[in-house]
Length: 88
Image 1 (cartoon, rainbow, N blue to C red):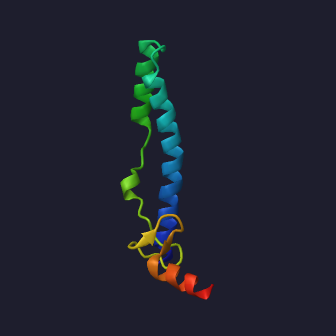
Image 2: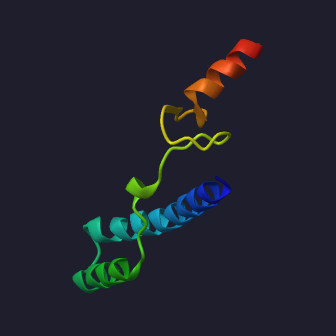
Image 3: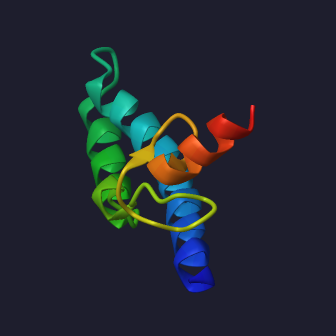
């Protein structure tokens, strides 16, 4: 079970890093005032970046590591959420 958590954490971290770079380079491409050679260089650089897809990232419960019925806001499964709510 712990390997799922480690893999998921690695995927999330790599996605955040590459997503920032990708959005930055896309802003260069969409800039109207930039010359064409710079835009093509940005396209070449974008092709070199390894992009980790967000579809591979599963929302898993941080306590039970279940992939289904997870509240995104709390990263907790429905069962754990109800248990913690009943404590209060």
